[in-house]
Amino acid sequence: MPRRTWLDSKIDVFLGELAASGMHLDRHRAGELITGQVRAVTALMRVTEATARGYLGDEASTDMAGGCCSRSPANGPAPA
Image 1 (cartoon, rainbow, N blue to C red):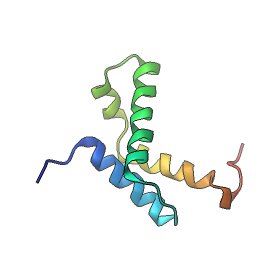
Image 2 (cartoon, one colour):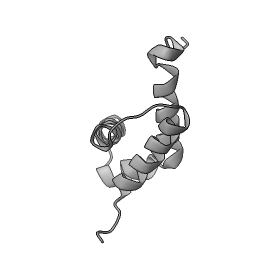
Image 3 (cartoon, rainbow, N blue to C red):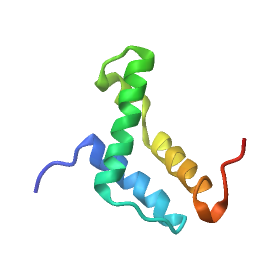
Image 4 (spheres, rainbow, N blue to C red):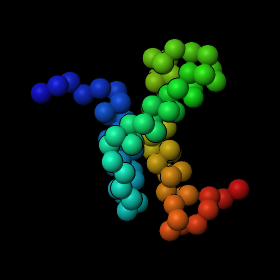
């Protein structure tokens, strides 16, 4: 069995949080979203991807999923 990667674990947390809110997203798209966050942190903070991943722990994945849920069409627009 292949070893689980950092991204795999963050995808699991992200999808678990979405599922708890009754939402679904495929693993590939979830991975793209998380990878996009890593790249944003890398660019904004001018750090390596490894350093950016260190800043994006499980709490960041949970917060990102919560943000998706608050902006879903069923919940209306996100608060300003």
